[in-house]
Image 1: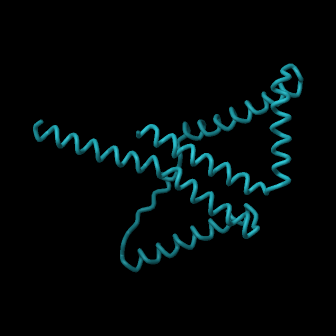
Image 2 (image 1 turned 30 degrees about the vertical axis):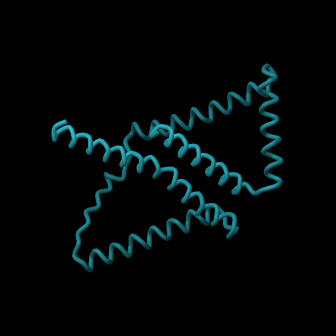
Image 3 (image 1 turned 45 degrees about the vertical axis):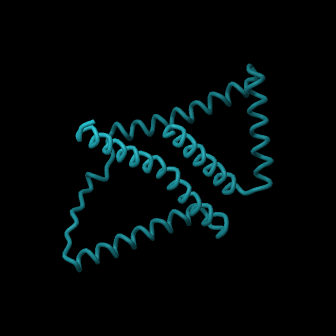
Length: 164
């Protein structure tokens, strides 16, 4: 094995470590964000509108403080609003994804409501009844947080299987 092979081998190990870190990052960020939302909505008993306004206030104050600090230290920060925009294709993709999801849900409910597919009808009724009973026992925020937690566990398990 010559020195180039060792160098390439070490580089590939470094890139796989970075890949593992980035694959772990998204579920952890989702879990932390979900925990903060759960705390704000469940324990403080505040609304989602209150959460959004609190987040915007914190972002605005943080940016103002950073702007003042950078001005005092004579650090110029170029702000280009064009970098903040998304492309037309990305916007169309997001809207198409939402439209497909709503359309699929509407299609399932329409088929279930007509009664042509009795198994689908009973699945929808059982699912809605279960969600209704669950909603009586725990708050919606708790159910959403539990779903987020399970989704993050699923992502972590999927990432660990692809690595191993």
